[in-house]
Structures are given as structure tokens and as C-alpha cells.
Image (cartoon, rainbow, N blue to C red; front, side, top):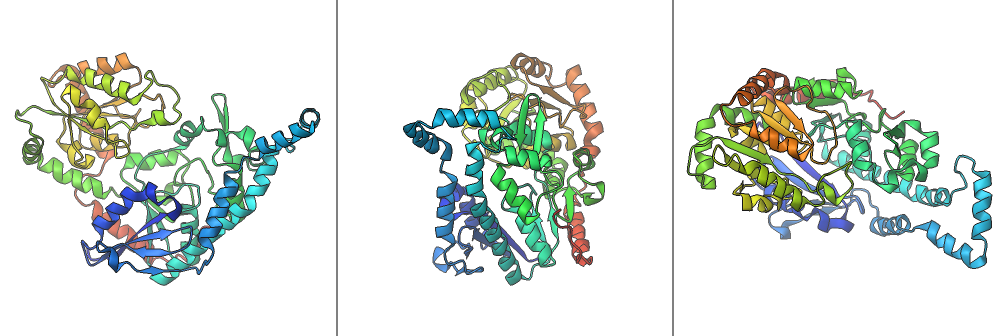
Length: 497
């Protein structure tokens, strides 16, 4: 809307297109809304790129890399990746009567774990994975050459076969990359989220753990690597390993635009150089600013839309994702249904004082349905629209808490999965609890107008400017950063080690 031509690129693999169905539907909804906005899909399996159109008959396709056998190669790679070599070898050796003698021989030799059967498995996987990474890099090179782009804007820069390769391809073509982080995440978050995954344990990745120590992390009795060994070797081979693989956005993007001074300090504490970070705000914060400025009118419209009859304050619950589907450090509950039941019971004591509204997490929308028995109204209105209208915010270790602080809204951070990140420990208006009873106690102290609530409100308002930049000029500052980054002589780009 500010006169720039924007191409929105969605990167995915056709082989798992069903996983991306919702995103592709959203792209279809975006296509055609403005003549300066183009939406595209790029299939990394084949290198084919589709323009997204409302009218599917208007679809156009090109082959930027000419990878004639791209999909067949991808299928072969997935087949190799899914072969579990050790049990196959063990069954064969057992049939020959060789398994026990070889196991004893390996125990006696035991030199750095090099004789593990998993080492042979990794050796078989590395060549096709390196080829796959190089193929993705060639797709990005060809794509960027055709587009005559001025800048690449990305939501994150983390290890894997997408962002480091896209940034490297951009540098090769003389195109700078600017990161606009959508969340806060440091080394601890990656470590905690992966510690229960077998594929990331150092004992199954001994070669990579020993030869590339920056990919390894040991803490609290866990010994892990950031990616499986074959991916680590692919990163090292292509020289795309970031200075700290465990830290989000520590790679080779040119500039990182964060939403507040607090986010800038957060990433600096995580090891990212301060001179790469610019606090500019975010487009979401411009929305927060407008909603906060017109709060009374917004509340009237919201009550009308949700069928809320009274004029009580708004208690907003940020939806809880179902992290129990994977591994979490600890949880007092055995299912997400039990969590929802506990949250519903706890907030119900404030039903006479607040309107109770939940905005479910995009990855788990049925959380709203689970809270309905407790008279909690569910809505999919964007969180950035709802937070400025609320008077009390409940979140589950969510980065959206920074929006609440910026708007001066007292917050209860319920760390129900016991991640213990500490992202908001410096925010005096945020009360972090992990125990179920502590959560109930914290809610009971948040009656509107009570002393505890007034104290939390004053502390949050005092922190607001540190956690947000609500002046309505964030889009202008972002525009200025993009322009200045493109104007600089970015001919000497940072590259891998």
C-alpha cells in the first residue's frame, strides 16, 4: 500500500503438499487483492514455481533450474532417509551368529564411537543430503536471477535447508537479506524443544558432536546436537553454518529489524552482534497503536460482534498449543483437554468481573471449543487486534506477551509445560507461574481495581516503551531500513566460515 512491488514466496515440498494446504489456501486468498502484490509457490523437490491465482486455470509454471529428475531424486532421498540400517544389519548378523562377537569387538575397540553402525548409516545419508542442499541452493539462485529483486525479507534465519541457502543465494546475486523476527527464541528454546527427540542426541551423532563442537550443547543431563549429523555435515560442506547454530537469527543476514529495545537486548544477550540489530517496531505494533488509540470504539464493536452484552473489562486468553503431542520438560496434566479444563475452571471465578474471551493458537484452534463449557467466548480475530482492547492477558510462554506489555496490559504467563525460558523475567507487570495452584492464586489476585491489579498495571505501563514502539510510525521506519540497506554497496557479503 506504500507503492512498493512485493512478491510473497511460499517455499514447500510438493511431496507433502497436504501439510501445507491451509497456507496455500491463505495464499490463494491473498492473490489478486492488489496489483503490486504477487504470491508464488516454489517446490523445492522439482524447482517448479507456480503463480498463485484465485482462478486455478490461470496458473503459470516455470522450471528455473531445469532439474528434470528433481522429484525422482527427492523420492530416492526420502527412501534412503527412512531406511533404518542398524536393525536390518543386526537381524542379518544374528542369522549368521556374528552379532554377539561383533558387539564385544566394538565394545573393546570403542574409539570415539566410530564403529557404531549408525556411523555407517550417516555415511550413506550424507552424499544425497549434500546433493539435496546444493539442489535447493541452485533453485534459489535461478529464482533470484529471474526476479531482479532489491531485497529479501524473511521471518527468521535458522539452520536447515531453506533460510541459510536462500540468504547465501541472495548474497551471490548481490541481494541483501533483512530479517523481521516473528518471535523471541534463544538457545534455551531450541534445546528444550528438541531434548526429547532421539535423532538429536549426541550419542547417535558422535562424529558431528566431536568434530563440530559448536553444534553440540550439554546441559541438565542432556547431550544434544542442533541437527542430525548428516544435516550438520551438509551445512559444513556448503559453508552455511552460522556462528551459533543454536541461536535463532545468528546467521548471515545483513540486518535484523526487531520490534523494540527489549527484543534488541534479548538477541544481544543471545550472542547476536549489536550492530546487526535495529529496533524499528513492527507492522503489528502500528495495529496495536490504532486499536489502543480507539479502544472504546473497538470494544463496542468487539462486544457487538461476540455478543457480549455488558460493559465489563476484557480478559483475553491466548490459545495454548498442544505441546503434549511432542516432548515437554514437564507438565502436571496428561492431555490438552485436562489443561483446558483447568484453565476454564480457574478463569471462571472471574466471570462476574470480566468478559472471558479466548483467541486459539493457529496450530490448535479447537482449544476455543474446549473452553466453551466454562462460558469462554472463542474468536479467530487476530491477537494484535484483541490485546489492546483487553484489561488482563493470559498467555502460555508466548511471544505475544510483549504486545501486552507494550499496551500496558497486566499479564499472567502460565508456563504450563515448564519450559522456564525467562524471556519476560525483567517485565515487572508480567507474573510467570508454572504450578497449577499458583495459576489459580495469580488469577484470584487480578480482580479489576484491587491493589495487586493496580500495581501490575502501573508496572506494565512503566515498561511499555521498552517493550514496544507504539507511535504509529513503525512501517515508515521499516521502509527506511529497507531503502538504506538496498542503497548500500552490499558487494562484500558475509559468507560462511
